[in-house]
Length: 189
Image (cartoon, rainbow, N blue to C red; front, top):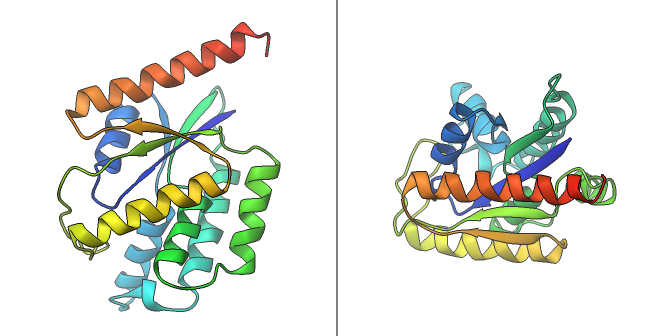
């Protein structure tokens, strides 16, 4: 199974890109943090990311989704974020990375769960707030830099997905995945 990560600043267009990739036949695994936020907000917690156990809940859901997302016949998946993004979130929030998060990053790195090429979706020049995304554009730029630093720290190669037309962004990702898949199969793997 080839698992590719899509990451970037909040509001950069990752979800829209993922929806298009899904419509184009890619198997997509949704972001865990957004699901945790929605669940906690539905339970009455307006700002769950301020709670001590938030990062752990995200890590647990990411691992669960990664472990249970295998679908028969699927050879490649695109993930909306990964544990490295959760590390970036922890750093951005000014919290030490919990042991469970560091263990999960160690597992996914050691076992090569994700491909080393990570699609880094660049900001669009603005950031629209949502119930789960309460961050200014300026703050999203800081968060973008933290994400980039986290991925580089853990040895991933960033594939730049510049701001632009949705179709161009999706084509860049699909073409890169096709090329990487061909490169691997061309080597007899």
